[in-house]
Length: 387
Ligand SMILES: *Cc1c(COP(=O)(O)O)cnc(C)c1O
Image 1 (cartoon, rainbow, N blue to C red):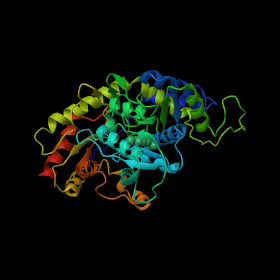
Image 2 (spheres, rainbow, N blue to C red):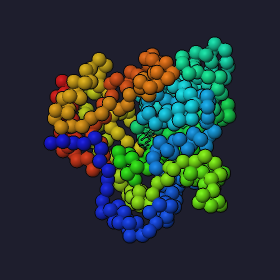
Image 3 (cartoon, protein in one colour):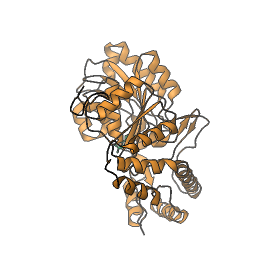
Image 4 (cartoon, helix red, strand yellow):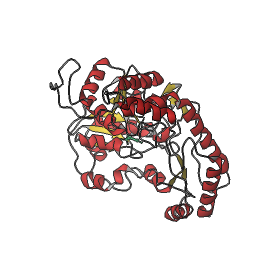
C-alpha cells in the first residue's frame, strides 16, 4: 500500500480537450490560451490575466513589472516555497525576510510595519535589517507576501502599509487559487497577483501559472515580457524590450480550461478531505491546521500538521514511509537554504517563529480524490509513528 502526497484531479474531459488541440495546427498562442486567461480572470474578478509557463515565471514577470532591479530591497516571508524569493535574486534584488504569524504561517503585518519603519529610517536601524553580506544602499521597493498553504495573508494591514510608503505589493497566491479574504478572491490584493498550476496545486495545467493585474498598461507589458519582448502591434521578429519565453502552450491551456470548469468541486472535495483529517486526528498527538476565521477562507493546498515540540521528526517520517504513506517537510525556511546563507550571510535566529514552525511540520497525503480509508490508514500510521 502506498498513498502519494498529491494527485491531480483529471478526467476524460481534460484528455479529450488535449486531443482536440492536437487535431489543430495551433499548439501555441491559439484560442485556448485566450479562453483560459478569460476563465481565470472571470473566476477571480481580475481585469487582466496573463497565462505563463509556471508560477515562478509569473512571479519573475511580476517582479519585472514592478520595476524591481539591482540592489532593490523587497520585504518577503521566509516560510514559503523558494521561488517566491528566488525571483528577486534573478533581478539582483535583496530579499528582506520578516517573520511570520505562529498560527497562520503568513508574514506578520506588525513585523512588516517595523521593518518598513527601520529600513526607511536609515542609520543603525536600517543597517540591522540588511543581510550581513551582499547588503546594498538600495531602496525599499515592494512587499512580496505569500498566501501560505492557501491561507491569504493579512492584506488589510499590508496594503495599507504599502500605500503609505509607495511600495508595490506582489501577491504570491500560488498556493491559494480559490481562497478568499474579506470576501474577495486571493490574488487580487496586491498590484499584481500570481497563481501556479503545477500538478500538486489545487488545479493544474501540468506546468503553468497566471499573473493578474488591474492595469492595462501592465497587461501589455507582461504579455510582451512573456513573449520574447514582442509588442502587440509589432512583427514576430521585432523585439521592443528584453523578454523571455515564458509562454504556456494551448495543450496546457486546454487542461486548465477543463480544470476551471470543475474547480468548485475540486475545492469542495479538498475541504472535505481536510475536515476528515481534522476529525481523524483529534486524539493524535499533533497540532492540526488552525481553523478559518471570519476574514479568511482558505483554499486547501496541503494538509500540514505540527509535531509536538521536541519530537523526532525524522523518526516519524521513517515510520510513515515504512508504512507506505508519503510525507514531506513543508516547508524549510528559505533564508536557511545553502545558497541563501552563502550569498547573504543569513543564519538561524533571523526569523525564529518561521524556523520553529519549519522544524515541526509534516505534510500528509492530500488531494481531491483522497479516500476516507486512505486517510484512516495514514492517520493510524502517523499515530503509531508519533507514539
Ligand atoms: C508552487 C509555488 C510557486 C511556483 O510554482 P511553479 O512550480 O513555478 O509553478 C511559487 N510560490 C509558491 C509559494 C508556491 O507554492
